[in-house]
Length: 165
Image 1 (spheres, helix red, strand yellow):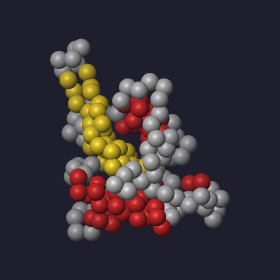
Image 2 (cartoon, one colour):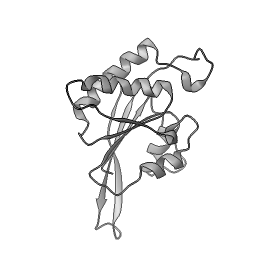
Image 3 (cartoon, one colour):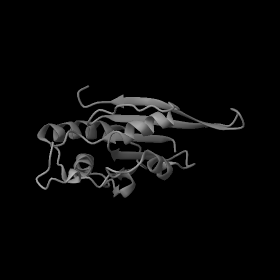
Image 4 (spheres, one colour):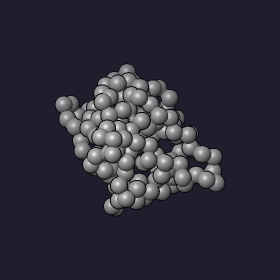
């Protein structure tokens, strides 16, 4: 992939009415932050972006902020995938999103700590985890360097955006 964009869901209520973690909704502040980041993403996302989202309600509501901006354009399809669920593993996420298509952009809407663990893993930070703040976007880019040790993929941090900025 050429671009991997990780968007942590915005601020959610402490507990859902049902008591189930996956049912937690965004707070009023969370909806505002999701809308701010969606505006920024809508401006910069490549057209061929594949959007993958956790089935948790707070992630779905975060993704909806981006979908609402595309009323005049072709709607961006959001794929709900179980490998991004609350109890998923960073190894499973890495396996599912790795590919050799250097023109592909993937936007993941998910949870901490897995997003921070995935970023650290891709940046070569062994046994480390990064904190991805609620509502923030981390954009990583990859490029293939054929002349480096028989060919190697280099991952670098392109930008980090937060709703408060």
